Length: 114
Image (cartoon, rainbow, N blue to C red):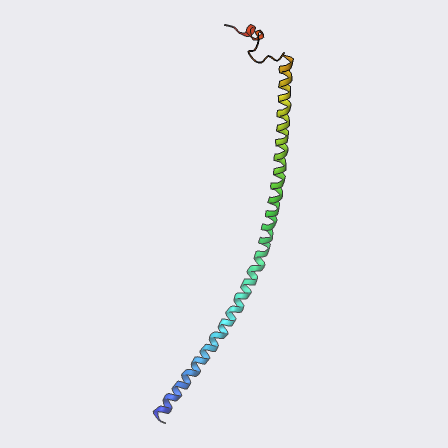
């Protein structure tokens, strides 16, 4: 056996070893990808109920906000009506007193003590 044949044999064995290592790496990588896919699917299944709950909470919050806005409009309308009625009552009271406002006539002089 010559040195050329010996080196050719070493090169062939090294090439074979590299091919076996590359195949092993590919097998382990494929296994890791399958495991990662399973983990992602499991996580997705566990997150779906949380997302559904968050969507329900959001829908409920929107409904409550709409109802609160309607109640605020009702209170505003009620306050406006009460103010209008109060202004009308004060105008009527002023009219029944003869249109005299505070300090406008001699009627108030009797109340002054001093």
